[in-house]
Length: 340
Image (tube, rainbow, N blue to C red; front, side):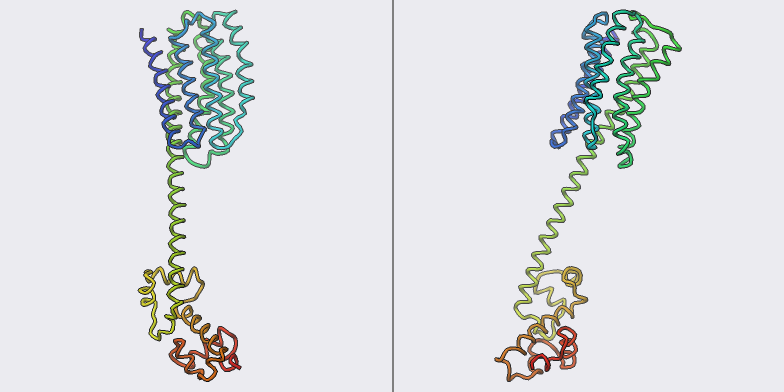
């Protein structure tokens, strides 16, 4: 009775994990690897049910059904974790290994009553597939601690699948089919597999959640960057509009007054002038606009009767020496030479 209860609880637990991964997939449908992991746990649940409750242990369908279910689970699990890191899943190789083990497992069932010999053969095939998955995970182990822990779990599962059956066969001897359920081998098998499987499921769930969280943070960062670029463009447009009103002609113009006119905070305006427009300071920015207007006036016949001093003050300069110095620095010649 207790065996039947365990046989029902374990597949239900595996189905629960499968549903958990399906729910995680609904939040990130572009990540197909989550569906593969969900199918893997669904296949595990089928194998556990067949092994414990569904089909009599004395039937060849019991052996074949269990092996097919576990094989499907192993292949899709390795496929899922490999696809997540863009590694080749080597599905055909895994399939060839598991299909190649099937005749040996069936032959041992038909020709021997020693169940743990058959278990060693089956677990050996599963362990090789897990090691292939571990090989793929090896290259991503340094990305995060979760990646490294996932690699460790795959290796541990592969080792226990290879070493544990052989160890118990050496310690306990051959176990008949009829005595398999009551042996210490079977109890230890279930316990070690349950602990490692639970840790693997929890790790994969955390990894899926972490992937989703990282994606949300990345999208938020991109959105913030896009908004920042849009805001800066609006601010630059506003600054250009205000400067087009010839506000630079104001002799008392300060960065604070310009900030009030543009609606841009003073520190943001200063950073924009220095970092984005490339001026050393606010004074250089304003003086360049004044020099450009002075160039227009000095070369326009309409202002031929206006003196250089009048032009300098009209453009916003407070003194002739300052005007001459800035003009020559920007244009390369004095205002008088430029007018000539």
